[in-house]
Length: 428
Image (tube, rainbow, N blue to C red; front, side):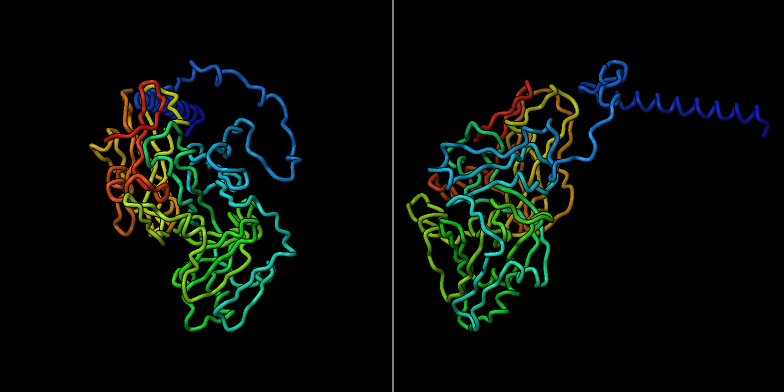
């Protein structure tokens, strides 16, 4: 091929590529009609050179531990001052509406304390196993790290999560109504290995887990669960437990209510019956309409919530291409399906499940659609691997009344307004 013919061919190819790009841009523009996506010429932020491209940035961060961008400083845990009696027996909430994926950053995992955060010196930390065992044992943190390790991703949910919604919709956003849940990878020693080291006696049926904090928090755990998937964890998502999450070691009880995940774990007493301690009698029992209480309601039921849009995360556009996203989870297994409703439960549409489907872990879902700008009543409804279907608030109250504050897994409704603002509401 001559040089002239070669240049002509390259020119024709370049023209073809330009024509293709023009047609692609035109097509994409048609797809996002009505959205806030701007054409290149119309957006000065892309048309002008910004300062961050003119000057060299800072070098390697001098801070010994990395931090998020200053433009994300609103993504923090928040508390409600009037909710609990004191700061030592208090709670703060995970900003679910600001997150995506399924792993909660360690610094955003919600906290619930009964006697404040225990500052445990790792060199003085000890874990004792006693009671109905062949040989009582005491482990240091270094001892625990010598046993075979396991990694597992599990959600941790407080039994009182969404409890404020029992008597009616609160003027709260997703963070405050549903933010007592987080999901991380735990690394630790299966509890079965440690119990086998001590040797269980034939009448060993229960384990009493006791924390090393000022409250002496303790809970009875049936042996079948202790030997199944419980662990003593010393890492979360790769790094050491945070002090507020039980450093240097805590109990992990996958799928069961968070108060059983005893932090700063110091003792495991093996017995032949439950202890009926304060936290499993006067607290963490489900009070029914007739005044009686359900006990041993350990498992967290099938649940989901739309995290965005939600009251703290309004839409910034008035119509067009829109993404609904949320989380679903179950203490009984995996999530098999999530449906989304735009009209308060009259009609349901399958959502798109994304990412890994893990046992007793959060699962992310999405629903992508073109919003016409009209008001919507947004709901999500999860179905787990056992076939349990997330109930409506009416169904849950018909079964258990209005007295409880625990185990509220009812469907949440958000009212999306024409302005893009979102309100917490109920529908009958």
